[in-house]
Structure formats: C-alpha cells, structure tokens
Image (cartoon, rainbow, N blue to C red; front, side):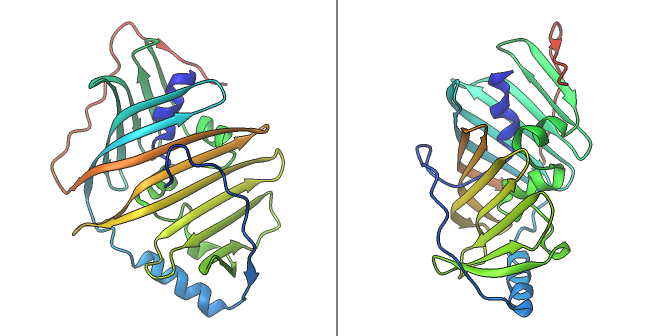
Length: 259
C-alpha cells in the first residue's frame, strides 16, 4: 500500500524542488476590499486553460517517513472527464491510476494488487475533502476550490496577493497568487481537528497556445508531526491530441480493501 500512494497523489501537484523544505508562514497584512477580492478571482480564472486533452511527461520525487522514490510518469487528462496516470520504473509500467468524477482506481505490479473506490481514502489521508475537479485543478495550476463560492480577506504575502477564506468551520484555507499573472503560487488547507495540513506550491509557469501550466509542483501532506512530499517536474506537455485511456487490471491481482 505504501508504494501506490505516490501514484494517487501524483494527481495532486505543487511546485518546488524535490529537496525543498517547508517554509514557515510569512508575515501578512490585511487589506480588506471586496472589489479587490473580485478582481483577484476574475483574473485568476481568466488564465488560459482552454484545452480538451493534455498529455504530460513528468518526473516525480516522493518522500515519506518510510520510503523515497524517484520515478517517471505520464499524465493524460481528458478535461472534466478523466485522468490516467502511468508510473514507470526504468521505462517499464509499474503502476496505473485512473481517476474519474466518481471513482479512483489503481493497480500496482510490484505487489500485484489493485484498488477500486471513491475519494474517501485520499480525502482522509490529506485531511481535506477531495473530488475529481479539485484533483484536476491541482494538476493544471488552478485554485483547488471554486473561489466564487466563499468569502475572503485580502492579505499581502511577500508582495503577492493572498486570499484567506473567512470561515468558522474546521478548515482554514488560503490561496497566494503571482501578482503579475494571477497564476496560483501556493494553496494551503489546514484541518484544525484532527490537526493536519496540505500545502501545494507552484512555480515556473509556461504558456502554451492551449493552456498555461506550472512546470514544477510540490505537495506537502503533514499529519501526526510527519511530512510526506511529492515533487513533480513537468518535462513536456502536448494538447488536444487523440489520446487513449486504456486501463485494465492484469489477471491474478489481489484487491485492496481500504476501510
């Protein structure tokens, strides 16, 4: 089970080098303005992401308290419909994960196991409710949540605009944007009880004709004073090609039941 977690979490992306350390929260100042909030949100959603399909080659560095892995991965996205992640070891497929709006599936050759279920496992592990749209948003460098559905304070963090959700719930959410482009720079979700946090960083955005994509993405999941990180480097991306999303579990594999 430990080895397959990188396959699933690969679809959650952040931008930092593989050896990047967590940075302590910066000093921020409040600047409340509803109009500024509206402008930030509008500018962020104005960033070009008008593709139908995407094929991304990536390198992935995964580090947990129990293991570390460096693998190659192919990420195929049929926008708003499905995501297929193929993890390769020395050029040979070692695992696949298929994510749709209703299901998360994977199989892993090393242990000859497979899983079929919903988003409960990822949600519990990361400490925040996940669904297909949130996973896709993280991959393409968009705010995890629909920003139009909440209220925010506007703050400044190292001269970058930061939206901090106004809430009395069990979650604290914030989104930091690059000031000139309004691409997402960092998004953070904290759960107060039980205490856990997910931090996603993005850098080195590249503009293609069909879309803007971050080139480096890193996820930190912090729970029980332990940190797991996944650093993803996008090596190449192609858009609007005819892609296949072939997924089938090889015979003789044992199903994993996650409670």
